[in-house]
Amino acid sequence: MSYAKRWRQASAVTNNLGQSKMDYAALAKQLIRPVEEAGQVIMDIYRRRPTIDIKADGSPVTEADKAAEAILLPAIAAAAPSIQIVSEENPMSHDSAAGEQFFLVDPLDGTKEFIKTDANGAFTVNIGFIEGGVPVMGVVYAPALGRLFFGSADAGAFEISSGNCRPIEVRKPDSAAIVAVASASHRDAATNRWLEDRGIKQTVSIGSSLKFCLVAAGEADVYPRYGPTMEWDTAAGDAVLRAAGGTVVGDDGTPFCYGKSGYRNDAFFAFGGG
Image 1 (cartoon, rainbow, N blue to C red):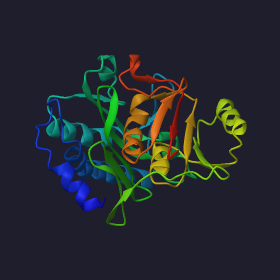
Image 2 (cartoon, rainbow, N blue to C red; image 1 turned 60 degrees about the vertical axis):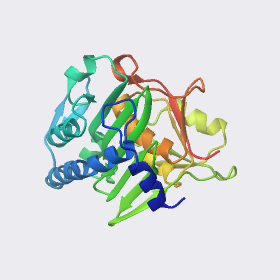
Image 3 (cartoon, rainbow, N blue to C red; image 1 turned 180 degrees about the vertical axis):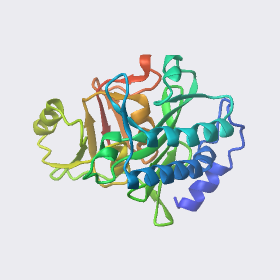
C-alpha cells in the first residue's frame, strides 16, 4: 500500500483525542514540529558544548535535556490536554501510576553520546504514546543526523530525511548475515553472550533509541538489550519499530509492555522481520 493511501486511511479516523479510540497518526503529525524545535535547541547547545550536572541516580543531565523538555511538554499538553505525561526530567511524574493512556517522553536520549567530544550524533528526542500497555505512536528525532522517524499503529512507520518522507518497514533477515544493533555506552557481557550463542557476528554499535529505528528501517535485524533502561528510553522507538512490522518481547518471550512499576524495564529483544 502506498504512503499516500495509508496516510489517507489513518487520517480518516475522526475520534477526539483522549477518547477510547484515538487518531494516532494525526497525533504523530501534530508532534513532529515541536520535536524538531526541541532538536534545534539541542543542536544549538551541542555546538557550543553543554554544561553537565549529575542527577541523584548518577546519570548525567545537561541544559539541553531541560530546554528540550520545556518545548515538548506544553506541546503534548496542548495536543492531548487530559492525558498523563511521564517525562524523564520530571521526577514527580515518575511517582504516578500509569493510566490506560499516557505519554512517555525522553527529551534527550543518549546523553552520554551527546556529551562525548568524539560523538557520532547518536542522540535523540523521543515522544511515545501508550495505550493499554502497548506503544501505539512514537516520534524519534536524531537532529545531528537529520533523521526523523515516526510511526503509529493505524498508519505504519515513516522516515523524514533531507526534506523527504518515505515509508519504512523491517526487512526479512538473511540467516547467514544477521546484523544486530547494540548500545554504544551500555554494552554488557550478557549481550555479548546472546550474540555469540546465536552466531551473530555483524553488529552496529550506536546510542539512544536509534537502535530501534535502524531495525525499523531495515538497516539491521535485531536489538538485544540486557542492560538497564527506563520506559521513556524505549517507548518511542518501540512504537516506530512495531509500526514498521517488528516485534519486541521480554526475556521470557512474552510481548513487552509499558506502565510497569517505577517505569523500569527488564531485558528485552527487538526483532525485525522473521
